[in-house]
Length: 110
Image 1 (tube, rainbow, N blue to C red):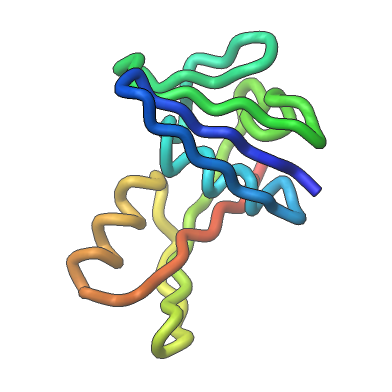
Image 2: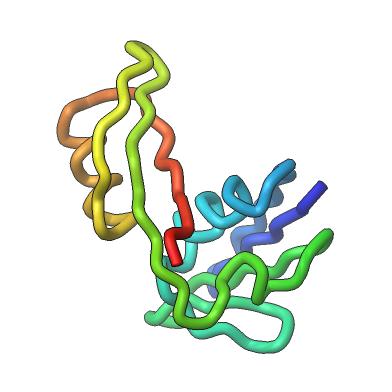
């Protein structure tokens, strides 16, 4: 089990438990982006507002150096799949604009 702790500079804290690295990666990318600044034990968004830490694996497992990803949308209401998309934000915007209840799925391709 992987536990991700999110915190922001305004004091918001959230936790998520994931069974897979891909699930942990998708939730972490929601908060800190596709390519955050990765420290020894944490990842920080490029604007410095959000930070995630993990337990149950290393932060480098969630955000490996030089990794390439593909993103797909899985709609929760109609069970359709859309994609692939080149960035997390492009996938999220597509699903949000369509008004679906959705989950962004992340797959490492390198």
